[in-house]
Amino acid sequence: MSSKKRPRKLPYSTLLKERSRKLRLQSTPAEKHFWNNLRKMPFYQSTTFNRQKPIGDYIVDFYCHKFRMAIEIDGDSHGQSPNQNNDIERTKFLEAQGLTVLRFTNREVEDNVEAVMVKIEKLIGKGKSPQPPS
Image 1 (cartoon, rainbow, N blue to C red):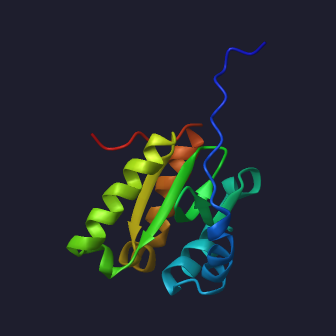
Image 2: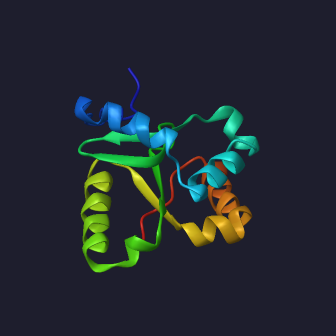
């Protein structure tokens, strides 16, 4: 028997299935730009990413099961108070599920997607998810 601890199954709400499908069809320009660049990365061939993945009561923009990594592309509204509080609660929930949450702004993706990809590639190259900030 293996000594590795098997990651627990993520909670899933079937109520979000249809909403996640619609979100995939209505991706923001930054999400489309991120996705197009992500698919060109060498690590993409050996790692599966999902778009608009329902987890619990949330839908994350991008999810990598192999590295238990959720990637969020945040628009301008995320810097405002009510949304910041929602993002904090969302991140706490996702981290409680054993996930690492990476957040990038639309501006980071649109202005310097290469740096975003390098950050993800370095983390995947190490074979583990990044540590959450202290």
